[in-house]
Image (cartoon, rainbow, N blue to C red; front, side):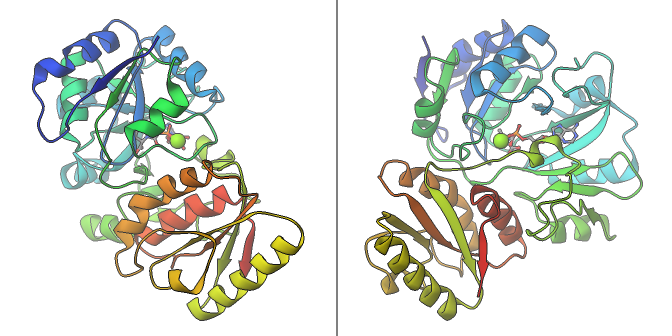
Length: 349
Ligand code: TXA
Ligand code: MG
């Protein structure tokens, strides 16, 4: 049985989190909101607790978890060799949507890090999340709170749908603030490397460090599906709704024309079609059409993308044609998720 806690993230008392913090402290699992997406948490230092996360999600055991902390002094007990760049990243971006890979200390169990010698650490900026971690008195391992392969959850109801009766508790705390997972950056070497694009952009990191950083070639651009990514999680199929997704990229006018043409062909083949577009073009389409928001406000597109992928699961569509988003700043993280949802099925026009 899963206990559901409905909590207003903008206006809550510590006592509302006591029961869920106790579950975490005693080795149970609790899903909770963060500023990026909802996570499913357990004590990162207890092997039995961490195993429950992998079971609940159906997650491959070689895919390491992010350890969430509420205070900077928790860092030293988990990681070592924190170099100058790592320190700067912490000062500049914590609390917030940046996960930093560091060399791990022995007390972090191998199952938390998927057998790696490094550990991923993040301090969320979400006040409820940080309070929960603080009250639990343990570092909290937390992957996104979806069944492996499904779109990440951005609302409590998404988590309830995926994880009810698979975890001990779910905190339903409204909509997340960003809608995309954290950026994962490897800070163990001299030049930091982005392993997963996310809530903090490459441009922001380069400005903060005053240097050029690297991006894992396997995730740079979105056509290189043949390279093996450095971050284990990036190699798996991800974010997929039940229907097939096809992305159409290019100039907006041509993209819309192409989608209309593809839709016609698909309908002739007897398929039910959905369209995932933006406010700029939504009037051009008819039928089942969801807009992610305006291209002028990329943060809104980020916020809506996973929810819309999930909305299609409530319908009987067989195929979704989705407009591509310009791949710069937050757009590169959006396209990274969308192309994975599409299994790299992209039409350029
Ligand atoms: O925003 C987020 O990061 C959310 C919220 C809940 O905090 N969490 C999240 O966790 O997205 P998850 O497990 O879905 O993604 C973690 C990613 C995976 O791609 C994993 O392979 C990578 O981080 N990762 C974790 N530890 C790593 C390590 N030591 N080296 C390389 N990649 C690592
Ligand atoms: Mg995930």
